[in-house]
Image (cartoon, rainbow, N blue to C red; front, side, top):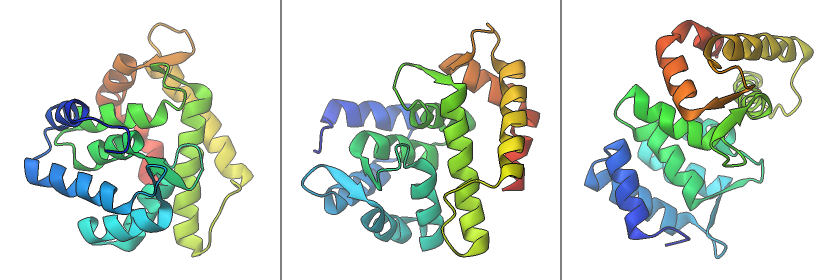
Length: 187
């Protein structure tokens, strides 16, 4: 199915402890929504997820926050990671899925730039919802907040000081230092 095999789906289901009926819904939703290229457009994602989540605005915001490359579509791997973040049963699982989504170049570590992209997307989505129009350029005051937040994140959870967050640092850091995440509580 669209570049994912049954073994990968089984691993995903086990990793995030997704109930079998939910797995079926998620995969069916992807198959029914993806085009010939094995991608889901924003419009189709929102239509599918609005049914599952019961809220079109939340589905739209979710897509925009996790369209990592800004292409307007997501592939099956991005989709499974996103569904892990949405449906994972505990904080560790949600952090695992989030790490996969934020790791844009899939090198197993998060750079300051990758986290900046994620924060920027999150704030632009939040501002778009508040303004009831699409915001694509971040106002200067938010750029300053992002820089300060990134400084704090790397100071607090980059334990080896190499300028990158590996998966363990990310998961442990955000689980043990929720104050680092206080920035997100505004949104």
